[in-house]
Length: 130
Image (cartoon, rainbow, N blue to C red; front, top):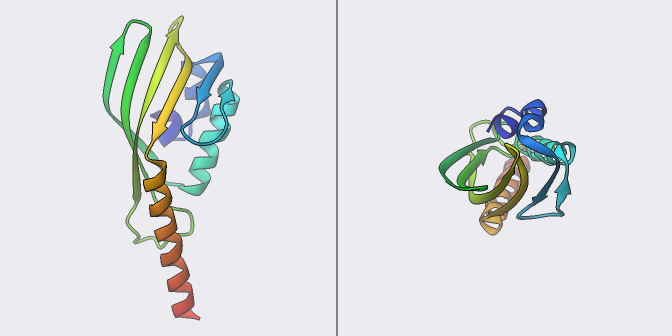
């Protein structure tokens, strides 16, 4: 959570293996903590108040799975706008105490709908003010 919510790349370095492979729900896979940190930074640019909360975590041997909810307000949105939210799941493979591989899935369609609605709201407000 510190790596995502606080944007703390050092926290990611501590928990990710040097050659971590992340299979993202959207976009290309990444290899290594620096690539993961760059992807997180991109999300945080688009939603500066981004926060992730793990709702449930299950562990079985070298694998863990976590159900999560991410919330945030799109950059440039009205400060009073309601945050958007998306649910997802990560499956982690742990090796030598660090995350070696991640498979992610999320409600990308629901997230895109919310982002489009927020963009339409901003456009309507801009047009009304003009």
